[in-house]
Length: 432
Image (tube, rainbow, N blue to C red; front, side):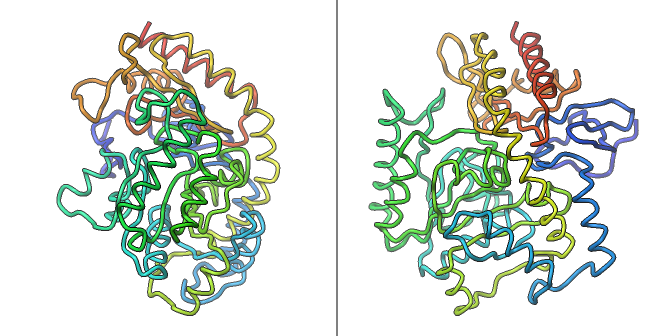
């Protein structure tokens, strides 16, 4: 078979991968006719499923009107989408600065923060993922991405703090979720105080971990984070690139924690990934300062009319799809929980339609294979390949001792059951 001249991203150059040519709902098809259940929404982004007629129709209609309008000016569909997006966002967020990708959105949020705060440092968590540009890879806590980009040129102004995670890789020794929340929040405050609060512009964090492992925060953690940011005048930015638009059972993961950040960054599910669209939702106060100070940042394709038309249609779809996620979340978690019968499965966690399965050495409870410090064949990758060979696409987490599952929000009870069954079988084949 002829090798494609198109180079795959994220280090998948040497892998045998199917060539996907068609999709419908939760199913995609290879060029040889093979059918796959897309149990990871490609890259956690096809939230409305493949081939959604409403989104496709809106894009076609917009293409017949006007295809591109400069990001430096206004456009009717761009304004309408911004209005409706603000309506579904947390109440304090009133304006949108559009971008193209999640990386761009996170860069824009940090640029705005540094400009308005007159401070250079942005805090991010170890074991986080915020993008693949130099700036966002530097803010990312995952070494596979950060070190690959920073090997030849590093950015400044990024300081890491420890995440409030349990599981086999927890940085805290806590006897309860409440103690974990307290210790992690105390640690964050320690970092800010010792960094020098006046030097810290913003804290950028995922509310529910994305590809880092679908971690949810222990109770009370984000209440403390909000209070700490207020006390030390640090802007709180929620990275909702993966978790936004229904993925966690509400419009944004912030809603599931009753968290009101100063900014939300979004991308991926905004259009169900039918066309690139991203941005930063901001409070009214930040928006007014941006209007007054006019920082010279932006991108050519930010807020494209076709993207905004797709976004409007996607918002209408998500009204119903979010209810589907809420209805099936418990079933999803319970069925995935059967994986805990295997000694090699250390944890199953998540929220909504974003879940992670963590693999451990049963004797030590350390990661079964830690790609950060070990070389060789990773059996967790074998699980991903085994599932794919049996018609279900799942993802590898960051670090690589995890498997991620995140189907489109239109997935049915039957499709969830099918995906979990194939994953169970894959674990049985690889680990016995």
